[in-house]
Length: 106
Image 1 (cartoon, one colour):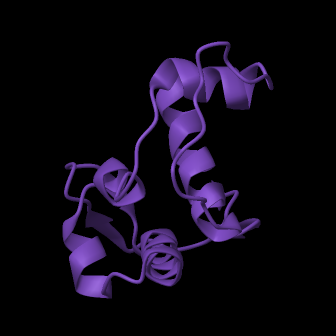
Image 2: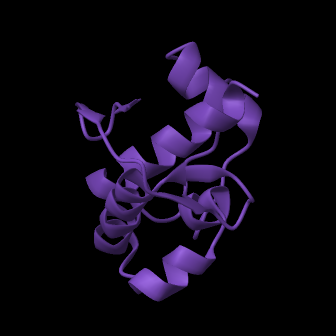
């Protein structure tokens, strides 16, 4: 049994798959995440299935880890931050925040 915070449930599933990064992961949680990324990125399931997790999350614009840490962990705008030329939607922002938080903890 594994806990998956995105599903907010205990997932009982013995079936696993190997991700493109080589990580063994539960098939149901991975399938759920890929389907959520399909909604957020408008890429196909097959495209996202073939991508590494961070590659899929970072599809599009990027931000430095220092800025991400400042925004997400310190909850403040960095002194040298400049506004982007285009805006970001809530769904994309949520996906990007999760990715950046994971990167900032490494």
